[in-house]
Image 1 (cartoon, rainbow, N blue to C red):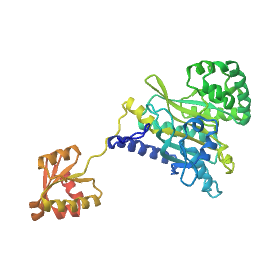
Image 2 (tube, one colour):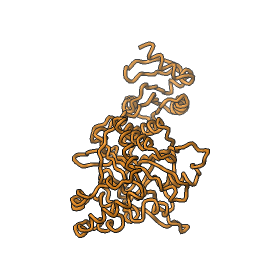
Image 3 (cartoon, helix red, strand yellow):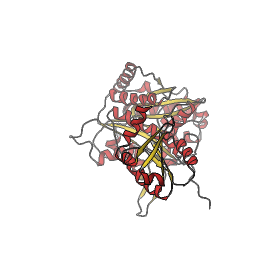
Image 4 (cartoon, helix red, strand yellow):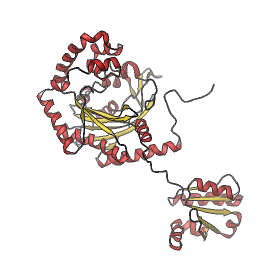
Length: 428
């Protein structure tokens, strides 16, 4: 049997991993600037958590969930999204307690799993950044989180990102709109796709989000949810828009955007990029004020988003975004001889203890081959260490770019490699 990775997964090889690390570093820096702190939750949870959070009629539950019974007979699911786990952790660890500062601002990164047809930018195991802000309902919270996502794209160097904005209103608004939408769609029921005919009776708002051509034509003239917002929800949405405009963050109102999860209310948004003529959502989220209470926690307003890392990398590659190259080595130790090999082990560890990136030769090849390896590894200097150098305690350190050489002692290298490198600056 030929062993291969499971369908819909990917190996992230070292050269590609360097790009991931670069993006992760920027994300953590941006999120930390906004005072968000990292949360880490399990990769799997009780199935009921995701079933209840995403909605029994959602595609995630009905089609995409990776769930199984473990050896203890427990119904377990691999997480398909991060918000439910974050809310569970918020409740279980009593982050709502009076002594905890509000809002509670958290971010996370990790694997998510959905069983769907693999395609470019969409895998069965995919990775997301997630952000959640819990404990305060204020239009300024919505705007700050959206602005943070915008800032992240700017710092990565992604361009052409358009903010799509909508409001789902409160329960009163959604109830009125749901009936209006059903009344509009019912005469077209036989023309809808199979999935949309099912959704019409289970969750009609999801018909608006259909990607099927026949459905798109029908919903194009559907009533707008903005016409059914309660006075309170309309005022809230107006305030969000006003503050976005104050920050000069452009947006388009997209009344057919509803998001795929049942727990959203009021502000929802997506950041969309045109990728070779196709719209690709790279970041999406919104407000979910009832989810904590739904899981038997206290009433807790919340706002957040998920951001797909694979999609971000796909966009970056298409736009030729420059990623900082991985740093080369500080030093490479070329080794010739058995005694030298023992000394090289000691010297390598000593220089690493001084916080330098160091590699040594293990192959016993000719020096010219070792020097080529040092160049490929972008080593700043090469230390040549043979049995004679071990006997005399004197070594040659060569700057790999300028080809200038310095004679020094092993004792000096062990004592302070800083001073050796400084001599290159002083002498050359």
